[in-house]
Amino acid sequence: MEPNDLPIVCIPLDLPAEAAAELLQFLTHLVETIERHYFGELHRLAQDRRSQNLDPDYSPFDRPESDPPS
Image (cartoon, rainbow, N blue to C red; front, side, top):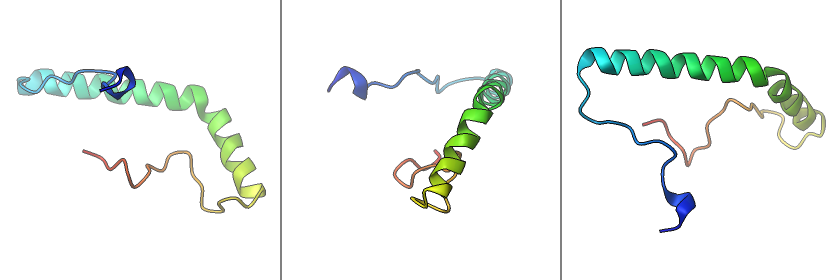
């Protein structure tokens, strides 16, 4: 196993419901903050790729098929 094979975070598996809800709320807020911060760059990237016709359906928010939601 290489260092880059390790997960960035370790997700606790035995959380009480209230703690799980707080964790989910925190993660949702984190994702929304990151999306707001990088929206312009992501939008420009999508426009550039569409204009180059590399992938007319490209969206920076699409998840690759090899990375399905868990």
